[in-house]
Length: 168
Image 1 (tube, helix red, strand yellow):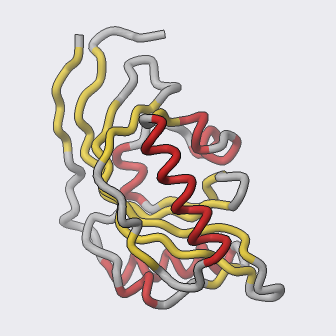
Image 2 (cartoon, rainbow, N blue to C red; image 1 turned 30 degrees about the horizontal axis):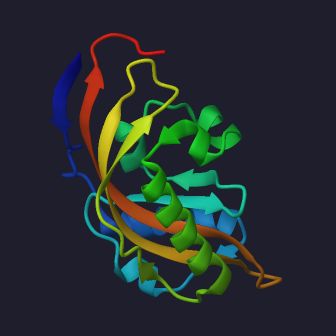
Image 3 (cartoon, helix red, strand yellow; image 1 turned 90 degrees about the vertical axis):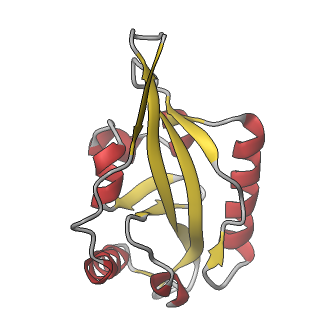
């Protein structure tokens, strides 16, 4: 049986200036550079993440991600994103295609241009489920070689429900 939740994190302490600062530090740590337009499109409450490409390993996430996610940093850094979360096949295909286009061919920050969808934490015993609204995506370039090494993305999430009992 599902338990309806509908939880949105409190964003009262969210600071765009602080998010930009932290994101720039994470990009610097990974020797990445991105299109400045990405920073201008950050919105209060955005979840911000950096992924290595094509491995799809998370290199950075902001505190908004942590307010909702049940995974440890170790799980996030050792497991590719597709093994941690379930989405409908069509949504996954659209996301992979869009991310691939932006990372391999794009040069600037762009809107994901995809609709909202559900996301399930597959390793969580109660299959926590979220509604995801994608925001922006931009390729990450290595500062020295200018090679495409990853992508940065924004999204918003609402915790919708979890099963009351463990689901295996």
